[in-house]
Length: 265
Image (cartoon, rainbow, N blue to C red; front, top):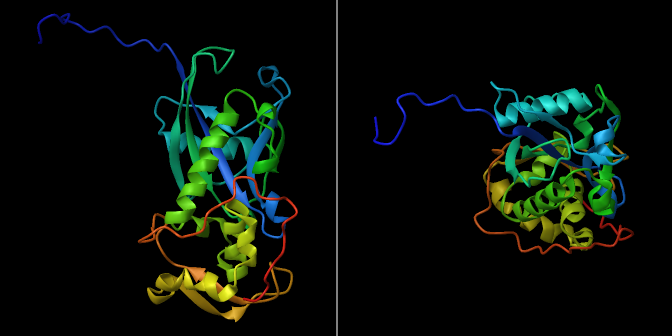
């Protein structure tokens, strides 16, 4: 035993509680572009929240992983089966005064899912579970430091959208190029809706060539984004990346009424 250490090390006593909160994003295709990028928030019947909204979260169990707790939070608070969803750790939020009830350290997780696969069902203690537009959500409307979590998560997604394939996590199983473009426009810049369809398609030529972006052989039914176009399926890995960043630069404050759409494709 090393010099200076006691013969028996006392059992560790917890001096903080660990929680896991989830920032779950979706893009609601068909909504106005400036409001289509949305986040899941809860209205809870708990005085600690002082009438404000919160992200879904739970206290970490002794035998639980962070992503396991995140999936449990989505199930318990919003009725969502996230067992197969992609999650990534966003960061640790540990300001001593972040929770008035005591010292709570939160490990935030980021999740992305297409809205077509989601049906919300508020859980115990939750009065309402709702999607709200990311850019229209006042920071002061969120409890604790959840506004900081949302800001960090938004920046992470906007950055990753330029160098990774995460956009496909926000689409239905089959989709049109117009719907793919709508995802990029909602998160990065509404001006992308005016990008010529042929030029937009060129950005994905490597995925077409590698059979990662595959034509289904049928056209979309009426009522989807744009006029009915060819349907595609994404077959690549969740963590796939571009060899170089996409050239599109997002606008930090896109206009909510900018919904002009080039509907070809």
